[in-house]
Image (cartoon, rainbow, N blue to C red):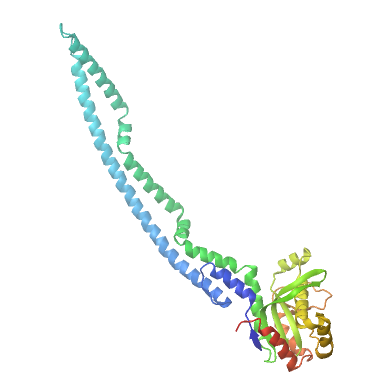
Length: 358
């Protein structure tokens, strides 16, 4: 089999993977890249955990040092306050012996005022010696609180701290995990499976992947306007032309689509196969001269619509659309009678080749 283009679903998937900074060349690389990232995360998480453990040990040691500093400074300040109290008490006791002397009334009054102020200071110092120590040590207490808070945080949040340290790696790994359960991933897997099965066909068959066709003007199909279509796979060979729409859906998603009566795979492949038919038989719908030429000199190219199932079954409908499992595609194609000559096949292939850059 001769192949043109690559899976459109795979291209879209790889764009999403690379947008997260993950270098992959093909679909098969994704699983290996996830394993590599998980291995790297495991290794770096172990190193980060050891770093956190060491930081906790250092913080515990720092807490001990700061407590010693505070205790030492607190003792020193308490001793200074004690000595100040002893001195004030001595001065107050001495002031009690001062008596008024005739002619020195002013000196006596000044002495009483000083004694009063010292008494106030003595009472204040005695009542708030602890507060005074705390005030003088506010920087040390602030440093101690900061270290204790950091240490407590690390002990209670080591897992989230590891995630923070490894954030770029975690982000890539989480993105990859989400991608690998996405519809894009299953779609790419399904299309690649179909391509792999079709590659067993002989070289008389040509496969066009991710084919985009656009007509020169709109046509009407099932009461709706139609001008372009994206075809998963277009297969051309002796047994005919096949428009293949691949579906790799879960049972739940199949039920959802058909329960809601939304745009089903049947609708999709009928539209795309009709557009391919119109593209291959354009003269049939052209001017009078073109229609005449088509009638007498051209052969009508019929198109078979196929839904290739790579996942769960879909409900069968009374329709010309063939529903086949991906594994049986090649045998189905080869079992059909020959309807196209080598010249017919080459003519169709030539019409399609220009849509794929070399």
